[in-house]
Structures are given as structure tokens and as C-alpha cells.
Image 1 (cartoon, rainbow, N blue to C red):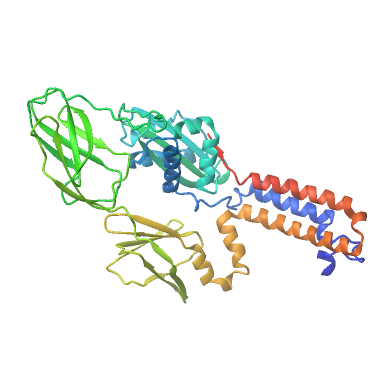
Image 2 (cartoon, rainbow, N blue to C red; image 1 turned 180 degrees about the vertical axis):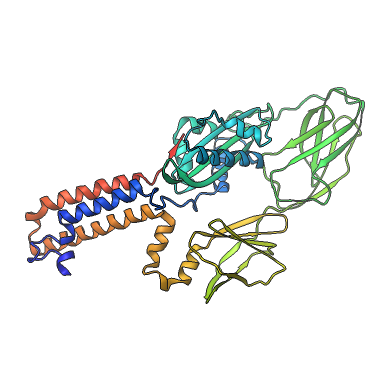
Length: 456
């Protein structure tokens, strides 16, 4: 056994596992895994580190740093992005425009979003949200979308699937604006405000706030304030909105309806707002509403999974009351509500795929946590190496195999160099070691370069 790993006199100071025959064998393994992995069911990468919310957050960080407004997550744009991602998988193409004439705009229109400005960024094959954003910001066309003053809304979809023969992760980012109002990059230190003149307000008799309603509990911290006026005036007018006793803004409007769209989040808790038409006595009733956008957070340190014969028992604590728990095991969905036992029992449960725990409150704020590793630990007797299993889950099987093979070879080379150096024979074998080291280096460059993805 020693001759396989360590240079000795018996193996002529070349471990058997570093002979040409073995190097050819390693090469065949890597070629099969990386070239034909998708066809034989070997996963390429896991998308557990890429989430729409993180993509949105990173996008807004870049915009704020450039003096631009933050984008609001729009459910219609998110639906359009998911429809586009699914269409690429269904029709097997990687482009902004599909083989049957599919365009990004048709998905946006089909979602019900009536855009004046719209844009799309695509990415695939990345492991992290940060990697996606770095690649987009390094591309002038993608960066232009991210830092465009034309947009107010954003929708992001992340979808795993087999595209063109390879298991991969698709990221679709869609931008939009349903108005003609745009924002340029303001000069450093500027804080200018433009007002619309008050014209022909004499016939406006009343004003009301139509959204939010009194008593609403809203989970979107960036929401629209909408209202209407009554009367015969058809000109332009100015609405002053007061929040919690302080003037929030002044909004120019024309016609019977008006709205205010803030680029900043409303603070958590209760708010009281009212509106008044400037230059008139028309003033709305006060509207009290509450912002609650914080989901129950799963306390990881309290999470436990126990296996008892034919079932798993899952227990955990959260930092606030939860209403519903959903567990996704691949395509299988298991629901629990607060009226049920605090102890979640999973009967006839086979944890063969990624397992994600979703916890939500009564109004729908959701937090999520990948808990696959807890189930692997719970059945550790079925695995010879838990850390290797976790590596395969987090990186994807093919990339896990790449890292294991290259790591093994580097270890063998390091051992051989050390032993030959100690025996004073390093100079005689430096040529062979150099060839092997270069071969491993080329492999490593190809493998780690593959950890990046593609954007269009």
C-alpha cells in the first residue's frame, strides 16, 4: 500500500498513483464528469446561494452608490422573469429572443405590466448572487441596465434546469417603469426638488386616500400612496402628503386620480397619513396603517432533526410568532400551520434532494433556510463521509468530483516532493514532477474558471 502513495526504492521513487496509467485514468474520469455529466444525471451546480431577494438587494446597492433611486420589487415583473426562464428551458435556447420569436417584452406584457421603459439581464451557471452581480457590472450593457435612471421597478427569477444538455441555474432580471418619469444622475451634493404649479383647483371639493386603507397591515415597505379628488376642475394641482405629523412630499397630478411612489422604505410599525390639495380647503381623513415586512427568523442554533424509524422529527424556534411552515424536498411540498403541534413530524420522508424550510407569518412575510445538512447528519450511518456529501450538495456533484481529484493529486505531489527532498533525490526527478504539476495546474485553471457563469 505504501508504494501507491509514497516514493520508495521499490517503486523507483514514483508512487504508483502518479504513474502515466493512473494519470490517464484521472483524465478519463474528469472528461466523463465534465463533458457528459448532464446526460448521465450528475448535477453541475446548486442554486441554493442565489436568491431573487439578494439579487435585488445587490442591484439597489449599486444604484444607491451611483446616486440613483432604489428599485421596487414588482410581482408582475417577477412573474415575467420566471416565465422567461421557464420558456428558455422549455424551448432550449440561451438568448434574449427565442427561436419562435419570443421577446422579453411579450413576457412583461403577458404579466399585466404596462411598461413605458423595460430592460432585461440574463445570467447562467453562477454559484452565488455576488458572482452574478460582479459579472453584470463588468459588462457595459448589463451595467447600463442596472444603473439606468429610466427604471423604477424590478423582478428577478432564479430557476434550476437542464439547458442545452447541462444542468445549470438561470437568473433573469427584468426592469420596468410604467410612467414617463425618469431619474438622471444628480450632481454630487445636490438636493433639488421640482414642484408642479397649482392650476385651476377652484372646483376641487374633496380629496381622499384610496390606498392604503385604514387598518391595513402591509408587508411591502415600499408602497404606493394613492388617492382621488372630487370636483369639476380638470387642470393640474399639487397634493401635499403628511405622514406622522410631518410633511412627507408634494405630488403633482392631473385628473381625478393621484399617486405617490417613494423610493425609500417606510419604517416598520404604525403610520398616520393624510393629504391636502394645495391652495384649497380640500383635506382627506387621516388613515392609520401598519408596515410589517419582517418575516419570522429561524434560529439556526435551535434547529434539530431526529430520525425515529419511519419518520423524522423537526424542531426549531423563531424570533417571532409564525403562522405557516412549508418544507420543500425537491418537488415535494409539506405544509404545517400554527394550529398543529409545535413538533413537526415528517412521515414516510425520503431526504434524497435539497430540503428547504420556509416560515411565514399571517400576512405572508417568508424566511427560508436550507436544512439539507441536518438530514444528512441525521442519517450519517448511511454515508461514509459527511463532509464529502456536503461538498457535493453545495458545489454540485461534477464540481465536487473535480475538486476531490485535483486535491488528491496535489496531496500526492506534495508528499513526493517532501520525501524526495528529505532523501536528496529531488533533482533527479524534478523533470517528471514538473510535467505532472503543469498537468494538474492546467486542470485546476479549467475547473475553477468553470465556477464562473455566462451573462447575455
